[in-house]
Length: 389
Image (cartoon, rainbow, N blue to C red; front, side):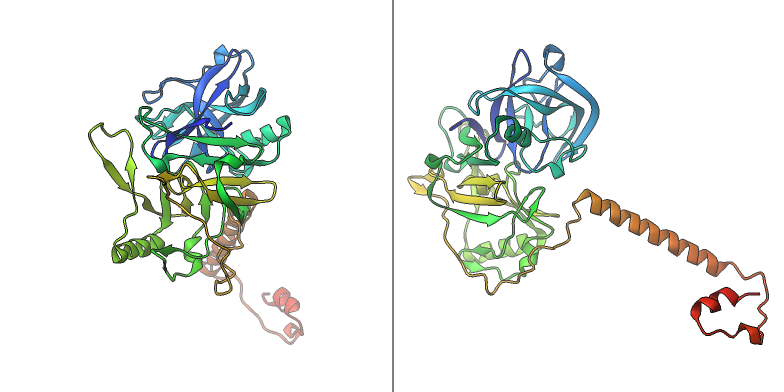
C-alpha cells in the first residue's frame, strides 16, 4: 500500500481501483471530508473514463437516488453495490456500496485525473442516510482489518520531474513506520461525523493571535484531505493576514500544470464561512493517522515533505493548556439528524402556538362577563374554568 497515490493538493490525491466484473479501472479521489463512495457513471467532458454498471455482472442497483453537495460542486446518482479491488492496497475483493454519478455540477473539473471520490469520513455524513454503510466500514467488517487508516501526501516537495504529479500513500488498516519520522502526536476526535478536532491556539511567526479559542472552532474544525487549502473562519483569516503582513512572512505554494516555462504560486490560506479546515496544503507536511478505534487523529513529520533536504513542517509538544478556555467547542451537536428534526419540530410547534395566540387576541369575545359572588375562587384552574359565562 506504500506509494499507491498520485496527485497534488490543487487537484487532489487519487487511488487506482478496480470496480465490477470484469474489472473496470478508475482513479478515485481520497477524501476524508465526506462519506460516500461514488464514481462517474456516465460520460462527462471533464472525465477520461467512467464506470458502466451494465458491463459488470456483479453490479446490483438499489434503486435509490442520492445527491451529495460539497463546499464546491455537487452530484446526483444512483445507489448500488459491486465488488472492488485495490491493486496497490489491501488484498482481496469486497462488496461495497457505490453511487454511480449521472449528473454533476462543478464536481469534475478540467485537468483532474480522477473519476470518482472515496469518502472516508463517518457514516453520519453518508447520503441519503447514515444507514448506508461507508466504504471503510465495509472494509473493516469484511476484511477484518483494524479500524484505522493513515495518509501521506507528498506534494510539499514539488515538483516531481516528468510525471506532472506527486505521490503519496494510503494505508488501510494500520500505520507504516517508514512513512514518518519522530513521534506521532495525537489529538482527540471531538465528534464522529467529519474528523472534527479542537484548535486551542494559532500562531503566525511564533506570535499568538490572541483570539478566543471558540473563534478557531466556529462552527467546527476538521481534517479534510479533499479540501485544497487551509481554510479559516473569516475573523481568524483576517487576523492571520494581518499577522502575515506584520511579520513579512509568505504562505505561498507552487502550482503544477500551469506551463513548462512558468513558475506560479498561490496563497495557501483562504477564508471560510462555516469551518476551520485543515486541508491538503497542511496535511502534505505530515503523515496523518485517522485512528477511529481510539477516536483520535495523529500527526507525524513526513520524510517526503522536504525541499532542498530541509523539512517543511515540524511537530513540538506537549504544551500546557492551563490558560486556554475549556469550552472551545460547542457541546451542542446540531449536525445529528435526530437533533435537527427535533429542533425543527419545536420551532414549528412554537410557530403554531404563536399563531393561535395572535388569532385569539384579534377575535373579540362574543359573550358578556357577569361577575357574581359564586365566581370567587381560590385556585387558578377554577379561575380559568369560570371566567366567562
